[in-house]
Length: 288
Image 1 (cartoon, rainbow, N blue to C red):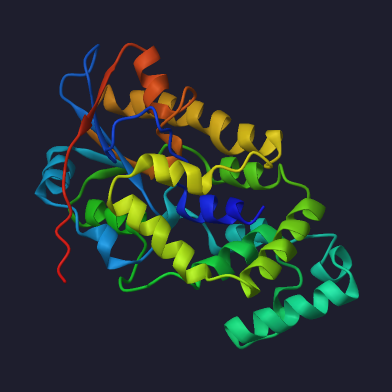
Image 2 (spheres, rainbow, N blue to C red; image 1 turned 180 degrees about the vertical axis):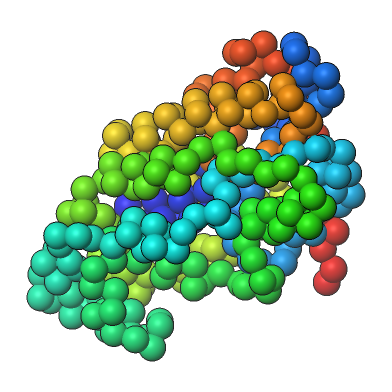
């Protein structure tokens, strides 16, 4: 169960049947010029920002930029409302013993007790705790870095889905199941090297080792309704909106890499619509 939070924090479900690339050129049919898909990872580790000029050139060649949702246009109150439970709390979802253990772990990791997170949906608390094990060299996560570059360069910016789409996917998991996964993740974390698992995941990402990433993130225990809401349904909307924008102007679209591969991924959906989708090879320029 713990792997769900690795998967979603990084957004890295990958299919082993796809070529090893994070950037894809979309052309053909009624597109006048190529547009691009880029698989992102929502972290602030400087290594994932070290792509070579192949990516930069593709970005600069496009008139418009798109990401999953335009985070700089979402109201803070809407985010908080989506993250909080209205009629429940962690102390009600967990036993007294579980709540006490969670309180101890959260206090050790954050310096604050669990009480201030008591109304937060377990899914979001799990994601926050997971992010604490990741290097934060950069001011912003990779997808937000692309957004800032797009804003600074005057590109028109779009979201290929709505904030409510993502929240609907999270809410497809019952609060009880979220609480169980939160607790199981905490127990697992106390006995394993979580930072080491993060490093392994990042190494696979940097190596374009899609098969390894798939193995690390694949979890068949996830509720079917979550997989449908989080990936399949959202992928359909992303592909639809990608085409709608790219028909009018060249587009660099950065979405979580989870949404690109597979029979129901954005790449396959675009191909089914008649577009040519090809991997673009690039390299990292990581300084030692």
